[in-house]
Image (cartoon, rainbow, N blue to C red; front, side, top):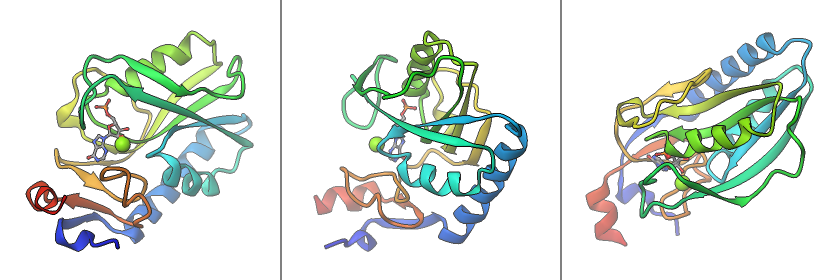
Length: 185
Ligand code: IMP
Ligand code: MG
């Protein structure tokens, strides 16, 4: 049973607000890439909902691919900026206009290593589109071209983001009351 109500402290971003902001982002991306073809790369698994909604609003030709990464860090923190590829892209990105689509940027470690890795594969351009930005937690600078929402330093879930792999299917972004969550599990 999905009984998230016991640890949901607030709905930070509602379904309606998500939808209209994602539409705006899609329109902005469409203007910027007018006449070009986009390869949208989704970082699994958190970015999946965002990717599928975002591309509905993208007008230029867009192809998608997926990349799985896992940080060497323990728990909810990625530690030293090293990530391991758990699932690699199936397409070559050489000469392509690559747009990385992420759920959330926290310390920046995950994305910084992904960007470094992808740069070596010679894309024509490489930009980042993140739904959420926890800017106050940044340890490594990441150049973000498109950002849905700047959010405070709170643990969030829903709309692709998980709590121990569950609740990704919720249509809103909620804040977790960690004490209540820990009492429950
Ligand atoms: P970073 O390497 O610290 O930027 O971590 C980014 C990854 O940590 C994201 O792709 C998420 O998978 C995860 N993450 C960071 N903050 C949250 C959160 O508040 N809720 C769920 N996952 C999070
Ligand atoms: Mg996650």
